[in-house]
Amino acid sequence: MWWQSGTIYQIYPRSFQDTGDDGIGDLAGVRRRLPYLRDLGIDAIWMSPIFRSPMRDFGYDISDYCDIDPAFGTMADFDALLEDTHRSGLKLLLDFVPNHTSDEHRWFKESASTRDNPKRDWYIWKDAGPDGGPPNNWVSNFGGSAWEWHEPTGQYYYHAFLASQPDLNWRNPAVREAMFDVLRFWLDKGVDGFRVDVIWHLIKDEDFRDNPLNPAYDPGEPEIQRHIHVHSADQPEVHKVIAEMRRVLNEYEDRLLIGEIYLPLERLMSYYGEEGSGVHLPFNFQLLQTPWRAEEIARIIDEYERALPADGWPNWVLSNHDKPRIAVRAGERQAANAALLLLTLRGTPTIYYGDEIGIGQVTIPHDRIRDPWALQEPETSFNRDHARTPMQWSATANAGFSTTEPWLPLTDDWAERNVQRMSGDAGSLLSLYRRLLKTRREEPALQTGSYRQLILDESVMAFERADETARFAVIINFSGEPQNVDIPHPYMAGSLVLSSIGERSAYVASPLQLGPDEGVLIKA
Ligand code: NOJ
Image 1 (cartoon, helix red, strand yellow):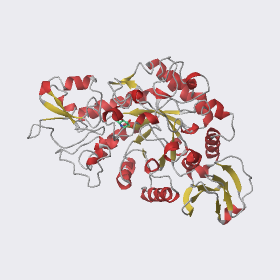
Image 2 (image 1 turned 180 degrees about the horizontal axis):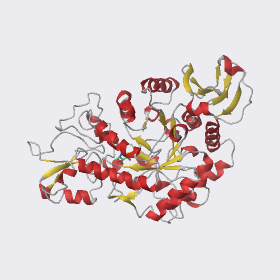
Image 3 (image 1 turned 135 degrees about the vertical axis):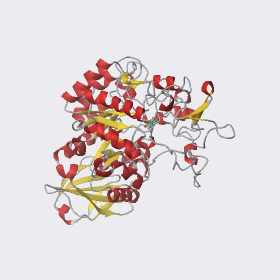
Image 4 (image 1 turned 90 degrees about the vertical axis):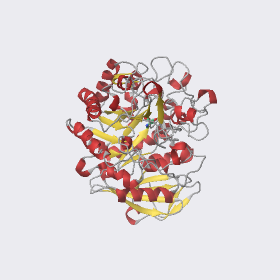
């Protein structure tokens, strides 16, 4: 399947390329950059939401699922983008946000109009608790109670995120049918699949019981960590709903369903579903959440590989629009090793735009914070703006992103850290991404071969990818010190495919001398 051998590239459309001179990226901008993406060597684009939205959560609050937000363009722009994406040999995945709508969606307006409106039960309405307060102790992911009092109808409604993002009631079959028609609308146009936002949230406890307190909660953490979310998400019935969703995808040929799921491994794996009834890929966020140390990384790879169901295809994510970028988490000097790891592990990789040029820390002055979570929980939450700054294309004004000041700042080093400059430098991170993607495309062993750990110590981790056509070893020095590594037999007379720190001799001997922060790919 294309989604098993291929690589996904996530675009945050607000920040990719502006063509409208307003400092905000748009669909025409993505279309203009298709040649870049094709040359980079990726296979599929996933775009964060582009639908009509008041943008309180930058498109994750949708007021019309079947229309394009004017900030991004028109439906004609979308159709042209889809056509050109396919003409470039790439797939296009959209972001489906089924758990909640915007409070400006007409469904919610109807639902909120009177208690006996036919759409009342499309959302989650409850009477006040015995003390007049919220019906239970559930907390919003962005802090504060997850229940908003609605004075005109005298009830609370539930919102797992902002109060302007009311949760839909997925237990209601009419809601499910309406949302499946949304999927069909885009599938009929020819989109290749969806990344489904917070899919594990769709079904809540039927009795809305309180969540238990988290004994490990540290008051410095976001408030959402205060409880263990045993009742507000990941309910057994969610799998039935996902199976229905999957059946809609199966009405079409060759489409992909990815689920956004932050859960412990064994819970995550249940989202593959019985006999292909779940999502094709439950996003694997292990790398996003693990300290960048050889032993830790080896451990999570091992645990993940062991936990996979027999027919479950693995996948790996290094960064996304909600978490600190890899160049910040692993450090700039390890960003190249992170690329090597992501693109040689067993499973579909998802590259986050801008990681290929190593976008790292960006200074965001207080008055330029835009992330609603950071604004709502200033002391405790990560400011997601840091992961959403504009793509840096060239050393011209505004890094070639826009003719005007971008909606979020650029990195301090944008004049050097940009696609144009780094394309001309064979030793740049961008050139490494290109070589890795090319090698992966040419070598079935790297796409679908087996995985086996070879070496592990405090600083160095090595693994093998192999099939009947070839064998590769990936050896990564996680430390800033040089390391001598005894390499296993078949690789001693092997050839060096690439090094993460640039040129080195193709001759491979044991012990292999790895430079500080160096990773290598060797073919036996
Ligand atoms: C997960 C998305 O990735 C995040 O950006 C958004 O704020 C929430 N879901 C709510 O849709």
